[in-house]
Image 1 (spheres, rainbow over the protein chains, first blue to last red):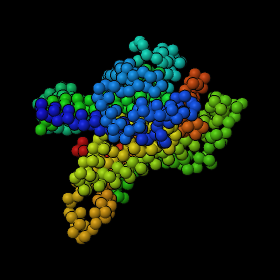
Image 2: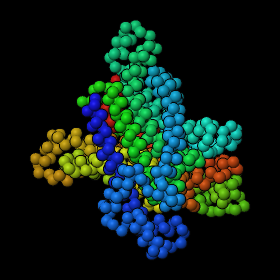
Image 3: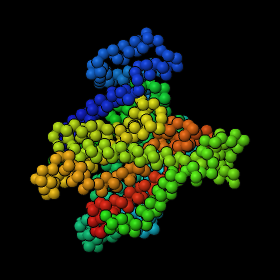
Image 4: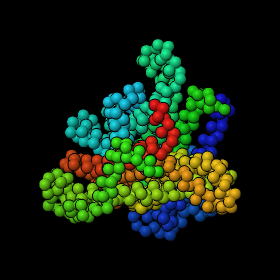
Length: 309
Length: 281
């Protein structure tokens, strides 16, 4: 087990290192000279040669690319993600301020997804081809195809604008969290319900379930004790997937609900052409996802000994 | 092939999916003839009008006909989907088959590259790339293609690894066929089924993602009648003109639903494993 964990951690470190390469190379996508592009959009006027040279030196653009990469990497490793080109604040401080909001939203939407997806998926599998199954499959299919930003607008329209029950946007009390968490949770619930249904259907085919039934156990005990225990294993994978979904969707949901998290920070930085912040936020997202996936793999191995080899 | 098609037509949901997609395709192909008005025509005397006889689905802030904009929007969304998925499939399966066939260092290098792309939450990386390139529909499409190819790569690589030791490949090699001929004439045609399924499901995902980027302002720019951009423009008028926030979302959902349902149906028909599972159940 320990060997497996060490190997898995090593893979995670390599992945994050490769992610730094890609994040560093993001600047290559900027058309023309990135330094000039940054300056033009900060002040609105054409930058002078001195300004260009100053920023070029500040960002190390006067040196070869690979040296710039290693300089950047060594700063990142020391926790220094640079300074925002717009506000001048250290990016690490900006991330520290935005990350809790994003994680709060991610975990609450995961919670919502789980309490919807489990009953839906299990009911669907145990009453296969019944009207219940059909209805829950339709609901999850619709949930999967509904654009998150549209659901957000609809929820706002009904609960904030028409009924006036919940605030339209912002962060603070629990009331603020409800609509964004439901928006993000719905898509995840739909995805998870489908996975839980198929994983449960597979388990219900197994011999040990037939044995349990043959022993004369009640259907409830068979489903909720025997089958569910086994069907739980893929659920950790689902949790990992949900984390990716939550972070990926955070940009849109946070923007719509003016939720002060990393996604919104990144969108704002993109429009301000604050490339330093965009790079740092992108890297942070990759690091969180890699950490979540590593945790999932390790707990998977813990739950299912066959994987550890 | 014919049997697969017949089974696909027998699947009620898949038929529904095909019908929906066909409807949108017709809208896209004949948009100027179907749409009641020009999607960019402004009528400043009838701004934010609710649905009525003059404008079936109402008008927006500039008095443009929402129905006409939706119909023209089908062109943009379907074209985006086809171009992005087409590019991702081409890059992904070409590199994937090469990695699987040649193995060795090339395989290691390409596999690591896909791991890296997959280490990012998809939307975030696409956003970052689209942001660096600058807002615009074409740039958004590029960003989605860059983040989209690794999943096709993985599937193709796996397929080729499984196929390359088979007898018919051995036979082709013994007959003196070049690697190029073996890959493109013998191997790729034999692993298309899972790619077709993935690409169909991928169309829905890409249309959704592209609309998301446009909604954020990173994709199609005004006055392009793009569904995501239309929803973005509708945001300030949620209270005064809720119809603006409803119809584009319905359009996105329907077309994505169509591709997902058709993709599920195709998988049942083309993927032997899921077919066995269905028989077992």
